[in-house]
Image (cartoon, rainbow, N blue to C red; front, side, top):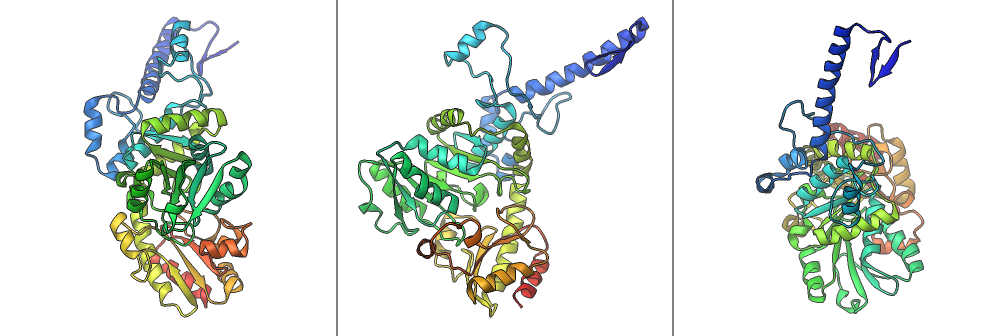
Length: 441
């Protein structure tokens, strides 16, 4: 009766030479596998020399290589998916050292995982941060960060014009926990009248979803430093390719990594980057709240990050062409895109961003009925929520990101009922423009 051992079939009475050969083949195979796993398990950029080299890398190089040590014999070029829930210890002394906080060994994937660690290292390096932590979704990153910084009886100053999910979190759930949220507009007017000793965080988003308004990050930092309040910026729309809030003095950067960092509409993920002190606190909260990232989405995220720069630069170029077309269209009431000189934030975008991004929105004359007709007529664009993938998308914010918001809330958020949000993908821009032309006809 044949026995299966480590994936090899062996006879119950094998020839001695064949057995020796099989064992040697297995040993070589096992050695290569162990080498790959050991490489994946090593802390990213462990040597001081590597750290110094990485500091000089540009975005594209960082995105591809940061967090991975791939030089050596039989080391896989692609990262290993460490598909396990838990990790072993050689003895109880090692386990004791881990429990005492004297060891950084992996114990359980909710606490940390080698594949996830690679994604975290890439995001940290791209944002210019000391550390980053990945989460199961963008909202897990945002909610966990806020709940780490703010307790019952304390307050948050939040920008009113934010992603609808963030707004509903602060409107509907944080007050249940005894946390007060005070809202400021994108220009930060009157923020000095909102602050008090109970204010423990300032939450911002720039560019905003869906109307692409910008916040002056230098102004926000100046105010926050004066009052010693930590600042958080949702950098999803810009990505670290086009905007680096930490370099301007912001304390923490959050991402829905589902979007541009992933880039292929096939994963759900989030991330937060900042100082190691803040990230250690947020990571501990993630461990207890349970919003940790699974290693397989982490692998997809790593793959997506590697093409981040080339994608977003091309998508941004196409978005500019589309915005210019829409600005001249007789059925379009307004175009929201910071790269247009007509944008109220054009000069601010040029001063704190290295590009204008691949997101835009436009208001159709005729309101929601006209906007629905246009979205129902597209042939290349897909009618779908989310954003940042290689496929171009259109969506109605009043039915997606900003659903369950009153007419007054939409007005304050600057969202017109006839607003169509556009995520520009990698299709030929001429084809996308023609698609919008026929959809609006």
